[in-house]
Amino acid sequence: MKTLPVHLDLFALIILLGIAQGLFLGIFFLTGSRGRNLTNRCLGWFMLGLSAIIGEIFLCYTNYMFQVLWLVDLSEPINFTLGPLFYFFVFARLHKRLPTHWRWHLLPALVWLINSFTWLYQSAEFKYNSYISAYHPELDLVPKVNYIEDDFTSLRGLVSEMTLLSCLAYAVLAFIAIRQTFRQQHHSFWGKARPDLQQVRNLVLLNLAFPVFGTLVKTQFYEDLGDYILACYITVTIYTTSFLVMRGSDFFGEKPEPQPEPPVDTRKKYERSSLSEEIEENLLTKLNRLLAEEKPYLESDLSLPKLAQRLNTSPHHLSQLLNDRLEQSFFDLLATYRVREAQQLLQDSATANLKIDEIAERVGYNSSSAFHTAFKRLTRQTPAQFRATATSSRSA
Image 1 (cartoon, helix red, strand yellow):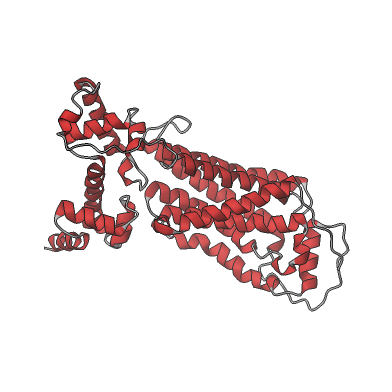
Image 2: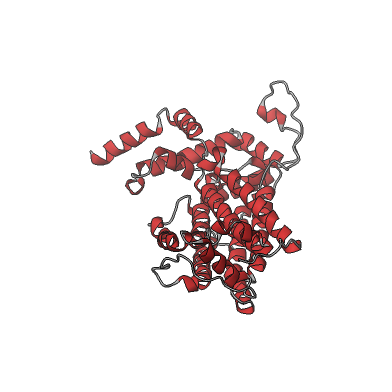
């Protein structure tokens, strides 16, 4: 079996950076308290899937695959998880849950995984021929040795087309889901909306363009010779996701160092503020409308600066409003609305099958213990006790 020397260039470097960043993001979203959030789990597995796909492309493009022939086509079953995982991420981001009967969406990946055993457990000669026929058609195939019959579906020759079709179908589903959310909240799809909705919209559009771009690339190259271009596009997707994560994080915001202050009456603290009564009234109206229509308190990463940004005011003015008019801190307000939402879910027969931890996640808590503490503080009952009481009232 003839081999070729390792080939490294700018494209190889870009793909390698994409692999590293994808692995980092995947591990980041799946570990710690972040891993308890459904949306993060979907995005984390999606990032790991992308890393596996472009990882194999990197090995093939650079000729490293000659040295690890047992890895040929190892990531192929993952092709059919990418579309569903991205759709799950978008749906969970918008609705705090997975779509109904979500397991059926993974059936094609399971079928292809079972099918893959018929070509993964083949001789080295078989894997060598598979690799060079796709990436080095100029090389001669080696004679068949100890081949076993492969591909019981007889569809493997169409795997690229089916992968692009799967990605397109789920990108369209994700597009429909985010567009419906924009309409429900009376936003123009291309206009300004909540920052988190804009981020999801941008990622949906980026993923929607992938199958279209992939089709154009595939028609211009023999077999998989153009996959390195697709891998670079996936790298762009990974780094775009990283940028959106960093842009939405409070970590990079400029925070003043806390200064110790003596206890002081809250109203006196803001007596000299420039926030007039009229402005305060308008801001309160906007706040109540925002909380009622968009329910930003359900977002686990909501912070005072983020809420102030949506209201086009400063965190200081918003904090003043909460103290003056509602006599609450931001965290008290957050807990009040989240617990109120949780009460509705706990007493609704349609969500009676949800576990307490799932309800905590739906209303914006990453930590179930924090949810229990807030719920008991505001209702004098645990979530389980409240549900039991509500169930008894319905059956009485």
